[in-house]
Image (tube, rainbow, N blue to C red):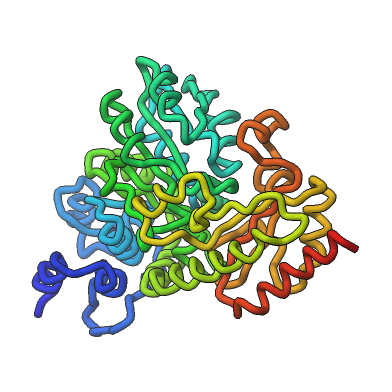
Length: 401
Ligand SMILES: Cc1ncc(COP(=O)(O)O)c(C=O)c1O
């Protein structure tokens, strides 16, 4: 079977097959594992071929800021999993967000952004993107009348994360997609917490999915990466920006992420099962005011999570009695969890959002997002659940002592 036939055959393949087979172009050596092309540039047979490649008259690689076979393999695989026409990989999740803004917006345009987004997303928009004459406003992510009423004539981009970081509210993607469509705006959904293994925003009407591939797609905390997946017309513009501006994914990182996709569903199911079990256990503990995990029946959008997602994910947060002092005491008492802002790692992580990931926001911005001093976020990894429970119990014991 040749390359073309193999690709044709994969068109009808199911997600688990796509996760290990899509986006593989086998070279002349017949290698079974995907090849890693660590090269910045490509050699041409002649001056005329170089000219034809540069002008686009002849298809083929020119320079790795433009295209790289390993990066392309990653883009094809993640696009297949998200059900997207095309993808463009970036150096990090934030580079993906920057690429989205620079590719699709002009001075005078307006972004309507959910309040429940990653801290650096807010900083990028408020401190940098606004300097180019783009207006930004924020909306309570689960206030759909608010999404509608805050639209402006020049609203071009709606942006949301679901589950929200770190408060784990669930946003109804289909409802916001309808609002975006009526306004002629592009809806971008950050799908980093759930990944295509558990949620496919494009199926629900979003135009573009964004990832920090640094998280679950890698899954082992090794590399930074990002990606935008979606409609071909939008992705062509993003590709054009990438080629000129250069926030591109390194081929080595692309290779790591490509292999990460092969085990993504299995890992996401294990993360989700452990997180739900720990969230249930934490809910009844003294000193814990509230546990935020969308798998809990008590979660305000649990029914929506059941409808919209294929699993609940591995991230939860909880608020402790006693504010920041209690949160820090809890975190410092743990022995197994890594105190780090990353998530989506095989190793469980714990962080105090108000003083780290969301520390650059003003107090009022944090208050609007519901990020109080006592809030702790845990991204549950793949360790033995009993060891994790014992570690969280150490944190709780420190609150009493
Ligand atoms: C939900 C979410 N989106 C985007 C990002 C940014 O991704 P990166 O760190 O790869 O730039 C993060 C990073 O922590 C995140 O948690």
